[in-house]
Image (cartoon, rainbow, N blue to C red; front, side, top):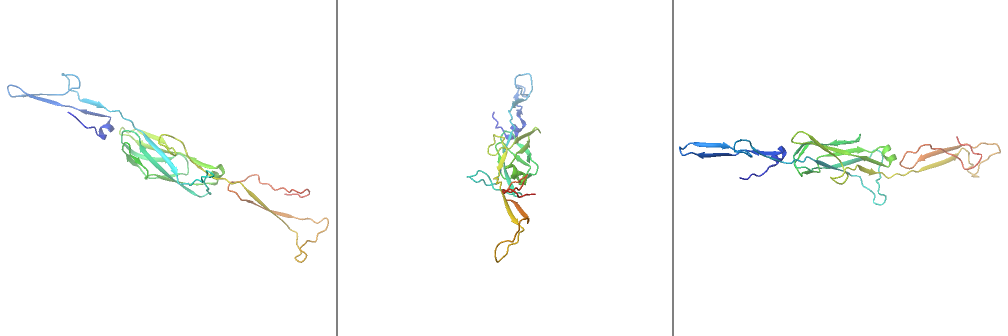
Length: 237
């Protein structure tokens, strides 16, 4: 006899069956027996125990463009990153209730749940978004990790943390942000200039008051900003 194993058998972790033999006696009656797996006196089913391997893997990528020269991305606070997920059943049993979540706050994941047969890969169901903050720009990067969970036929769970390129790794997805730290200063005085002579009438002892406009011209937060004067006798407050 022969039998072709099905996915349902693998999910069950075994295939068991029983045969029956029938014979006719000289008196035209029938005798029968159900099979045993090792003894003529028993009647136990023949059980083939199937090795099961429940596993799942996740890849997470972002839609952020990377400058090939600087190897970083130009982003501003408020910009939205969209993530795509590739989920694969890397085991040999069917997984149900497959869901993806993110381990970092502020990342919203949508899609699912789904069912994956062994070897099946899904690249369209799950997406996520994240809004860049000034803190991310100050840090020069935003990195995070997602997690996929699936339920086995025996009602246990398998999971995997994402990698940015491979089903076998577990590295966070890192968006490197281009940082530009710069500052600019404008200094003006309160002295009135005669439009005809294009000069100012001043006497010894007159006080000039200067005003300063300071601007952060970069994309990272600057602290401890102070103004000083390069000429002696000028008091900056």
